[in-house]
Amino acid sequence: MNRPVLQLLLVRVAVLLLACLAAARAAEPGSDFEVRRLQDSLAQLQQEQQAIYQDFQMTQGLRALEMQDASAAALQDPGYRGFNSPPPNYDDVVRSRREREERLHQYSDDLKRLYTRYREIEEEKAALRGRIRDLMQPRRE
Image 1 (spheres, rainbow, N blue to C red):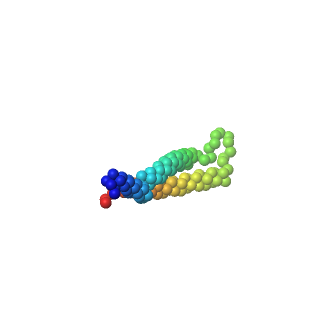
Image 2 (tube, rainbow, N blue to C red; image 1 turned 90 degrees about the vertical axis):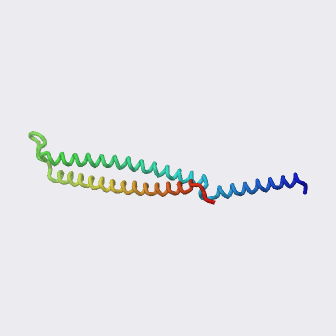
């Protein structure tokens, strides 16, 4: 073979090898695609966690208001509704107290559930961050 044809053949082989290496690298789990996919998952978890935090704050505020109303009601004379008004019905007072206690219990359960889910998401995010960090580190060959 003459020299220019041999050089052309070597260049083509080198280009083919580089293309194969690039394709193999793109198929590796540490590729940019994998990192982007993990970052997207991380962003979704962050949004979910933010929504849970807002729900937690709202529920905490409702529970605080309910407790404030309960303590204010306990300080008031339950029989006083104004001059010349009849005393409250005992069953109504008991039912109102029971409903308030049920709401407080439900708020407490909701707060525990939201806090637990918030912590679970935090653990999932930490795992994703670790995986992204591992993929971003330079490879040792």
